[in-house]
Length: 421
Image 1 (spheres, rainbow, N blue to C red):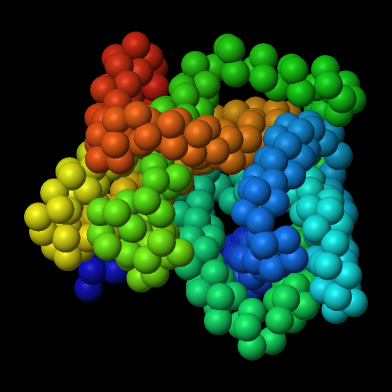
Image 2 (image 1 turned 180 degrees about the vertical axis):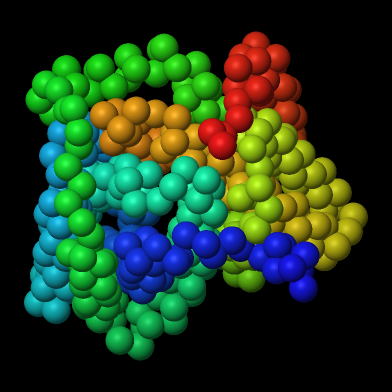
């Protein structure tokens, strides 16, 4: 029985009252947040009938996320992190409440929607690095991989359940109810944050301005292991995240409808499904000491899975149904590998960095996680038109494998990195 239990997620971090309350609140909050993620572009399209306006959500979301993600990390290294979490959580509640109000009043103003979305992402950009920087203060280092795996499992499960629930509810109850549900669920997080102890930063220096952000980035130059953790993630995402090609692949390779359909739904849900399964069976992560090596292996598996996806797309003309199943399976394997990679990289950042810079490094982490896939959208969109979807996807997966192996050789300190015992 002990061996079987070891296959499943390590729940030891949940014995910590502070982490358990945050994690349980996140189960509720993440679904509400995903309802807003679905509702905003859907409402914008309903108002304008123009996908170009929907595309503006990428710009209005990414810019404040980058700016306030970096600055929020500096704030998290200067102010009491509990107080900062309280302020930003209240900000998220108010923003979500304004989303509900504009929908309830039927204002139908696309620029108001985009402005609120940018404001929401600004609060999120400060909240998220602060929240991640809190974990090493409330948990021992050896529990961080398990804690991050548990948190990622909830996030990915929400990214499946939220859109599915939102898609069903919009035509039944309208946008205002989705925003209201998001607003209400955020109070669960506010309650959990309120019960945290004081989390003031010891030995803080300077002020949380541009100089502090630059100093945080400069810290990475002297810590090649942490810098490499960002580099390998960028390699994996930029060259191995072909989500921009999913609509074309679903339609032309697997016979789906132009406007979507079950094929597109399966391709879109496969990575989150794999990540959730990887999280459920993540008991092994707590016993991994060679975390640098684990990250490299995880990204190599991701690259191999994306290469396999490219092969499935190339062969879809002959065996369409079988290759769709294979494509979904490859993406699910990739999602599980990505979950493991992210859990280890996050744990390395939390444990190996000084507490005085943890917030700023988590800000960089948010920027990398958000920016890499968006760069990939542009790159894969161009490459798909140039060489075809199969070659763009499969070639990207091969590049992930080759470049990751090069990094492992060029930065032996990352390959040898071991978690502190």
